[in-house]
Length: 374
Ligand SMILES: [Zn+2]
Image (cartoon, rainbow, N blue to C red; front, side, top):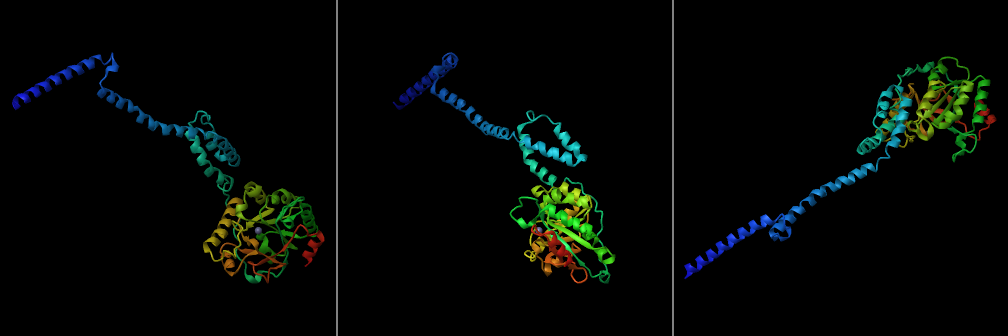
């Protein structure tokens, strides 16, 4: 009985299987015509196929925002043009570089991503260009004078005047630091008419070694645009020499450009000396050897590179110095200039504690003359 039952089942299974095969053959034939009749198995296969393009399209999506992000940075070319003009103006030798860049396809043709890169690279090119990198280094035209034998220095009182900035009208908040150019001219005129000799630190030893008649020093601290716009024309008019103690970081700050400094220095009417890099009180950082080195050495190098002239002197910002500062200043300079008030005596006072006489906005011509007589 069992065998008969098993045989019956097997027969039934075979029959069903053959029917199924025929059925699917029929489906395959009819498929192109009647898609609606498709077996659920085929339908799920189709769904799976239809699902494939979806994941394919998703990786594309992140690419689209990238392009739009890049295209949103298209305005970048505008600032690019300005530095090109600056560099060509400052350094004619290098015109091949920037002009070749100018011959590149117009902004609308260049892929947007290139602009993004160019814009990122810009600051690295511009910042040094306006400071020192673009200015051709001049060979130093002067050697530091060898220190003279101490007994060769004659004892002499030398008036060394201190100024800062100037404005005829509407001076800034620090009113007294703004000397009127018209008053400054009266002072220079007086010194000229009374046969004073305008000296810089390059002349220092001559004061002791030779008979320079009535030596006088005019010094300006910090470095301001007004030194060029207001003071320099007066110096040219009277052929008067001055010293500017320049904080190296003041170059290009507030309109006092490297070109102005070069023009003044090249005229030989202005000698630039150091006032550190950042105008820091050196006494405050005298425990920091690296900080001192940076302020003393970097400022000297930067001003020498800019002017092509040897830097001999440093004025202590804020008048701050101590024994440790003097010890370090001697490594780089021949003179340390203080704000101690009074005549400097070449025989009695140290060359690293040079004294000065400050002139302010309220200093009248009579007061100025009496300072000379003191
Ligand atoms: Zn200063």
